[in-house]
Image: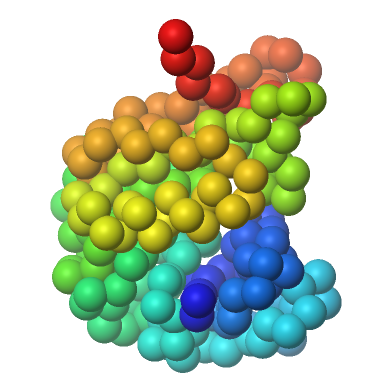
Length: 204
């Protein structure tokens, strides 16, 4: 699969590293290809390359939004037309909604990336655990939500290939609930004194 990743930081870099190792073709969309962060992502993921946001978005059958919330609007504007693309939103907006923003980051991304098939995912665990989502004998759960069933299937397969137990949390209107888990993860990390934690949905 062709995957364009908008961002080369902790989340985008690690996802690109894992998916490239699994045989997917990955292009990182970056603002500055000479930055240490972009070069580190490139070195960690052999076979990938750097491009502009627009080039990476045009390249990908799947496009991954993996930048800090403050850069989301600018990045999406630079990416150009995402109509029909599967767009994985990995962002977390930790502040209250700004003027014109929806109640959740995921729904706001869908407003800003008109026509994209937005799926919320990869935002409820520390970025380092994207490299190894197993905790002892258990696999961490990855909660996803979106309005397009086929897009969720694609994202679920990509998450499952990384070793996650995929949990379909429903429509994109549930993005606020999924993002709440991210805030809880951050809180518990401070309370428990470390980041070696993850969520797992248990079923009887």
